[in-house]
Structure formats: C-alpha cells, structure tokens
Length: 86
Image 1 (cartoon, rainbow, N blue to C red):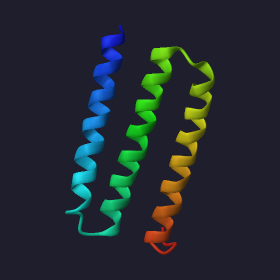
Image 2: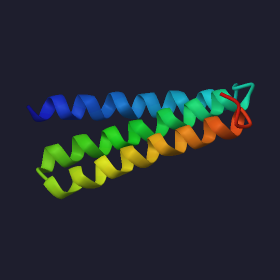
Image 3: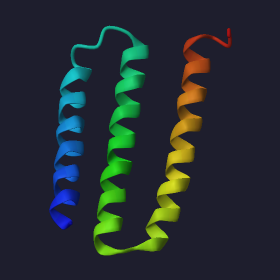
C-alpha cells in the first residue's frame, strides 16, 4: 500500500514542477493565479499522502484548515482580478 502513496507523491511533485515551468509562459494574472492554486493544492496533496503514510491524524486536521484557507484565498484573488464585478 505504501507504494501507492509514493506514486501519488511523485505525481504531485511532477505536477508542481510542470506548473512552475508554466509560470514563465503565462500571459495574464488569471493564469498565474490558477497555477498558484495548483501548486498550493498539490503541496497539500503531498502533505496528505505523507500524513497517511506515517499515520499522523493531527496532520489531517491541519490539512483541512489549509485547504479551507486555500479556497478562501482563491475567492479573494478572483474578486481582486475582476475588480469586484460578478
């Protein structure tokens, strides 16, 4: 079962590497914001896999809070980019 966790960690790491390479070619702020979200939630995914691998239950609570903060920051950034228009 641990091999599945390591494969998932590698997939998340490759996603982060590709996203960081994509930052150089992004043309607008919206694309960069989406890339930032991808990197953030991939890092949360890596932390989740590590917490499940070493059986840390308190880490899962921290990950839930980090996910909530990531979603709120995405909403705030989208409001800034659209200048408050819906």
